[in-house]
Image 1 (tube, rainbow, N blue to C red):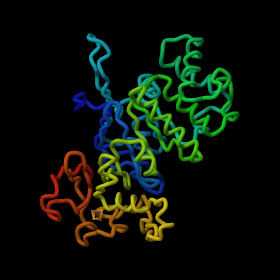
Image 2 (cartoon, helix red, strand yellow):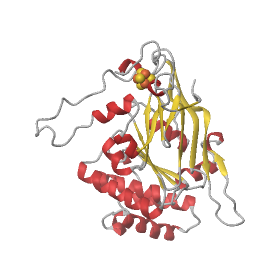
Image 3 (cartoon, protein in one colour):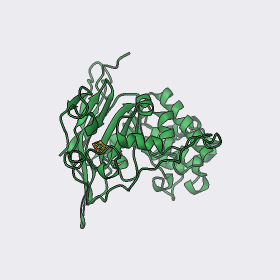
Image 4 (cartoon, rainbow, N blue to C red):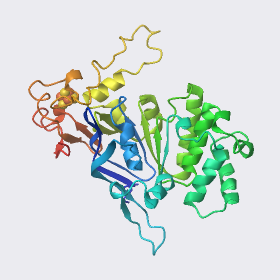
Length: 358
Ligand code: SF4
């Protein structure tokens, strides 16, 4: 059934720059996408492509000297009762330290980080930190918040939740700490959970358990998840829609099936070709594992034209190194920022969407 409700989050032409002595780093440079209610989206790309800064911009937790310089991030709230219509909050216009923004952060949008130790206070028990978050966002007593915390601990598969609640982060294993972080993120029933490489620091067994846990919780609670990762295997397991980012921009948007079976952007294709395939070596059929040639350009020296052109095997001389590619819509759900799909180079291949970046 088609969801006719407005999207939960609408990001439009978002630019988040870092002003350093050496120059300006355009960490996010004209990103646009939407996330619908209950949808799981993946954001992929190499380190430094702007995935985490996009997420931090949505949460309004970009650290100086970085700041959002333009664009918009709209949070659409649903009506809560007949006399309480839904409203639209423009997050980029809010003071990051304001009470309203703090209530959105943790209440309506929450985030799970790669390394829980950077987010959990080492001098407070994990339970007290979650109780604090619950009492900040909900009108409940500390006793009720403690009871709720034990319930959430059971839900996220914490062993002995009534005892673990009084433990300090250093007394828990990496997997248990990540479960505590997820419990904290879920404690106020957010509409959007942003998971920033939540399993990168875990061993494969614990990673599989945490991914299964997130899948179950998403089904049960109906929240949207924005899954940030460089691991395409995780993308395949977890997401419906994928945004591929390169140098601060989304270069391809596709359903997870289109991304794996019919990738369009040369960068996406190379990312997929660089995944090791189980068993092909034993069969003696495997070509050498491909890597993407070259390195991500220096942030102060972004190449003219398409920023990927120095690394791209499909580069069109005189075009790709001169003109910034426009965004082209292909079919119903795929969009790609590449000259190979502009009508001049591939007649009839798609409808050109006006360029949103400079
Ligand atoms: Fe390669 Fe040109 Fe497409 Fe950039 S625009 S990805 S250089 S073919």
